[in-house]
Image (cartoon, rainbow, N blue to C red; front, side):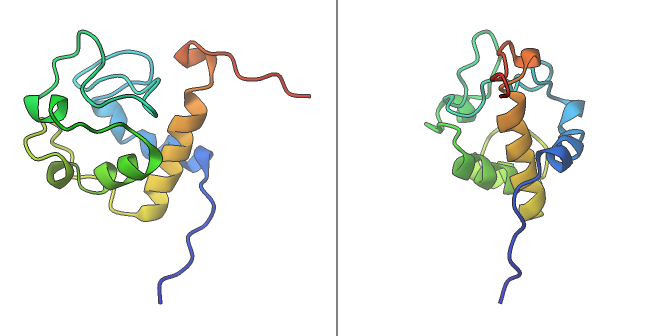
Length: 118
């Protein structure tokens, strides 16, 4: 029987995101494309970024389930991708990372304003 997974922790996800910083940034393209606006975006669609043909042809739209699958095994999920990272093997780390990306998208860093707190 598998242990229950804890609720996603965006703060821990930010620490996990540090692994991504070698190639990615939230608000601008580096070796890899920017992550602002990732959820809901079609893979291979950031204008001006030189994606692999495999990523452009993948027909993936990044939702949480697909991102979890890709982060677990990028090279198996999109054979031919130029992303050479082996992935994030721990399911909790992936859930936390996705929670961070969701939260980061709603910050000024990604060009959006977080909703006012009441």
